[in-house]
Image (cartoon, rainbow, N blue to C red; front, side, top):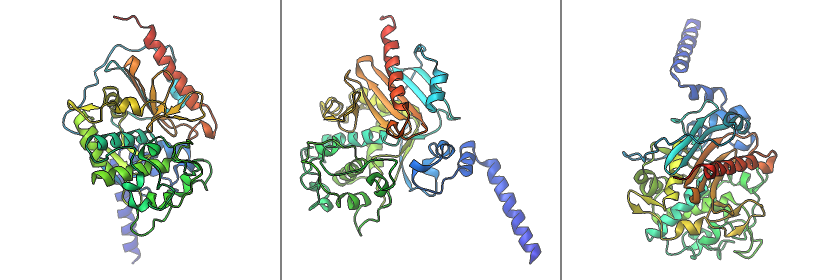
Length: 399
């Protein structure tokens, strides 16, 4: 018996050694830093460094669904190097930047990587995905699946009938002005943004819908802006209900495949099997930049308009005052006074789009805090850098 036990131990050790030798560097990093808590807000910096490039490979997290790319890739040729007037290495180190891709006039003007990450890797988006989800609303309107964004949300999600969302329109969800009470404090374990992830769904009801329909109103719909990740998750449920398709397949069909993304992406699923539409797409940073190019180009993929006429202008204009001197809010896009706009995610994820300068900046990272609201000034300094990029383009001689 003892010899048998020793043999099993030896075989297990050999198997583990073989796995370790064959595993890629990211997988070894993930194994060494695997978190045991599902709440990313309370992970250590090394854990986030490991998992942000591997979210769809972490057993404790939910499953994911593939967003399939196509056979043809939208080209991103190299352009003239951009002199930003900034020490890029110092900026990336201070920001803990994993990837920075600057595209201007359709050409890559700057591309750099950090945190031992590279162009072949996929980094998680966090709330950058909110702008993806709102774009799918536009696609569903264009396809006739959604009649109007003035329709009531409960027309498309019947399980919300009788709740605080009975008189809330799709437009009010898109602009986060539903008037429904919500707490998005990332540092508070009792906040809605923490609790709704662990909510046990009512039988036969989507987990997000089950949580959101128990909330109460605090203002007349359309009169008060409050940032609510749960409502973006509702938007995703609404799109799936209207189209009869899961978000990953619909996103692949309308954008990812026809526009020419280089790699498959993935989208994490909630406990009842629906994409977590306010978060959690894994994609390459170049493909995040390509999504910016899709928006910059008017929402056209493979020569066909994906969105209704005027949708992007409407979606990226200021509809709500956020209380910030820098940002307003559109349809799940952060707007700036100069006509630029952004998709933003916690811990340093962003797609910055400036139509005036034909500029897209895709940036991924791992800040020490989730956002400036939790301390620090990483978001403020990132915006200052984006402004420096704009100024650098303005200084260049015009042809």
